[in-house]
Image 1: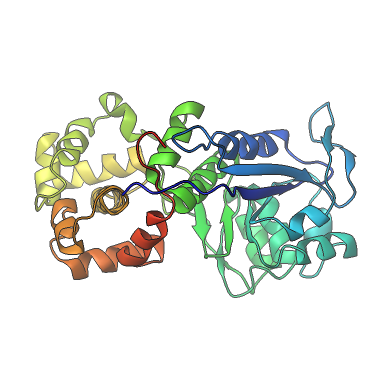
Image 2 (image 1 turned 45 degrees about the vertical axis):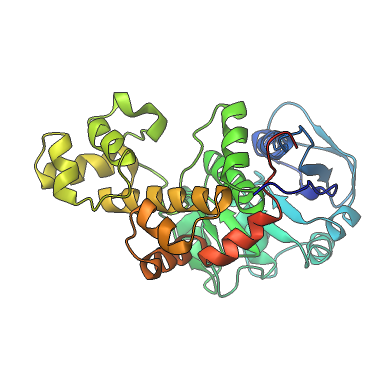
Length: 334
């Protein structure tokens, strides 16, 4: 499915405010900045902007420089709003300054995403009314009380509502950025960014914010459920049951289910469904297989089952997903 590369890049504006956390600004620049085509062409253009361009105080002992003003938001494809340690003014609906509200209004045609408590800014601007959203788990109760028009989910890493996305803490901001890269340019590009940045390549938004012993799939050997996960990944197309998985780690179903959730934040079958969706995405991006064949190879059995799980996970049909990446997946040597 090789196609010619487009010369256009996706413009990402990071809107910073006094008290901004430098890590959150940096992670956005690092992740989107590391996204390149197979020929090495940058896929994103990064812009750091503020309501008033210039030196911006951070929560550390150094300032940062924002060279762009709010006009950068008007031409951005994506706007990222990191958190700040000076969020008090946003702790009520409509609590934004007139200048910040006007700046965000310039981004009305862009995809907009918050990291950590940056969600308070989006909520105060009314951008989250009637939508699901998340923020750092220590702030979810306050967020829910302050913004009753928002459906707050305290137990997830990030929420994708289409045009508006929110994430939990700083580390979840990494997951959200990788999710957006994956949405824009496919799983292969996002995985390459993760490898270059040395972070886990994929944690679903529905994974719990806090788990006892998080073990990425890339570190299976350190896990008491490692054998079953490696075994399952090698045979996703087979009809696997919870009892089958537990047997690979020589545990009862009850013990296995408890330990699996402690280590991953997911139930075994949630994890298995996510891996099957991942496999279906790869096949949709990289092959011309029919949806029926992909459903069989990914372990969903029927095209109808694949469509149901795919839409639940990603909000689009397999056909729409494939159509998107026929225009963005780059062939070898391009």
